[in-house]
Length: 265
Ligand code: MLZ
Image (tube, rainbow, N blue to C red; front, side, top):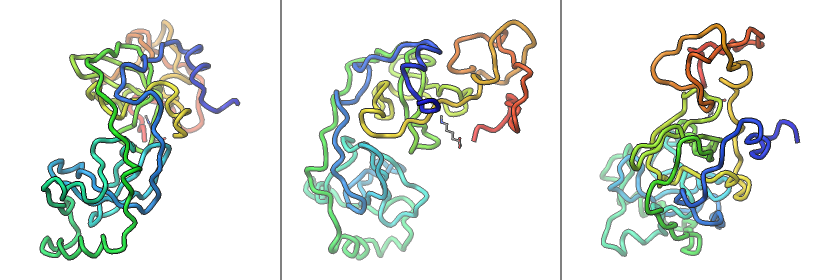
């Protein structure tokens, strides 16, 4: 299938080894997704982790749920795995002595919250407890190494999972670098983040995997010759070469000249 991303061919061509599955806080097999669009559940507010809110499933992709907090707008949707520790059936908060809170940025007057809550839960489709899957255990320590390959959530486009490489390791933190995007989407996170998956996870879980970008790999060749300047410490991920080796071949592309300052969006 030319044009469809294939890890085996990619690793043969570009080198690199998949990070072992034991590095990740993910179960041996991706969990089943038994949720349906429209189901309501309890989730912690990503913008205010001390609040438990009502959320509705507004989309799904493999074992990932796209969630929207009830009473919030549609610009703060977030994604969680079905085995996320942040998700619980409706009633869990109250059973544990808590109170459901309005989301940060509640669209109405705060005094209307109790009535609003009653209204949205009346006759609602509640996600049954069988949908919720226990969070997997956390690996004891950070065993990622620089150069290892993985699949990672693009935090600027959190519906996307993309091929990535470990760019650096510092104690419990790892630097996730996205293949072919010259650093524009890279981030640091803990080794036990739920946004990190082993190579092949998307294929087995039924989640789409974005192909790598082409910036820094299609019309950029690594050889001796004319140098280009780049600002900051943005490395030409994922190829481990020094700036001194980086040159752009003169083969013109259609519109994007792939200049170092060009937009990545
Ligand atoms: N705005 C970009 C998305 C890039 C995603 C990169 N992920 C590492 C585009 O539309 O191509």
